[in-house]
Amino acid sequence: MAGNVNDRVTSTPSQILQGAGQLKIDGVDVGGFEGGVQLNWAQTEVFVDSEWSLGSVDAEITNVDFQITTSLEESTLENIAIAWGLPSSSVLSGTSSKTLDLNPASKMQTVGLVFEGMSGTNRDKIRTFTVDKAVKIGSSQTVLNRGIKTVVPVTFKCLLNDSGSFGAISDSTITA
Figure 1 (cartoon, rainbow, N blue to C red):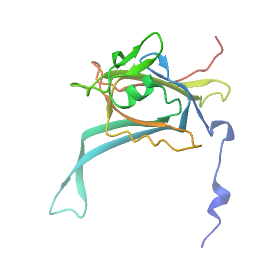
Figure 2: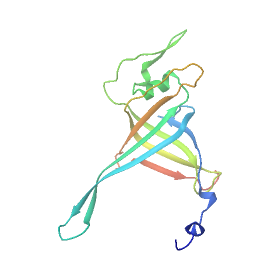
Figure 3: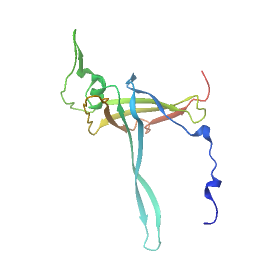
């Protein structure tokens, strides 16, 4: 080897972020979550090749898929309804109980997502992730075990808003 590459790394510790905070779905704080909030930004590309070139000569993005996954720690009936794509009206409160009606939804429920993390400009400030439109996708397998916390996994597919955007990420820079 021709030198120690590790001596050439410049790292700014104040910009190494950690943790995720409050998660709101349609403006409602859904409580704690396990394993953080995972963001998956994927794109599909098409490449144009020429028999006269050794490599691709052009490229185009044909699709962008943005998904958010987490496991809700508070296994409330409302959170189960969210994770199973059921409307919030499926949770009925009576005088002595609450009931989640397990009628399958005939259409996908659109929700807004807002969650927080550590700001990249000042670690004492907040980075806010806002997704305007999302729908619950896939399955949600909840396991009921004795002596183990029950979590409710959920995955959302983000949809473009009227402006052609999934939403925004904003770093706080000053204290209000």
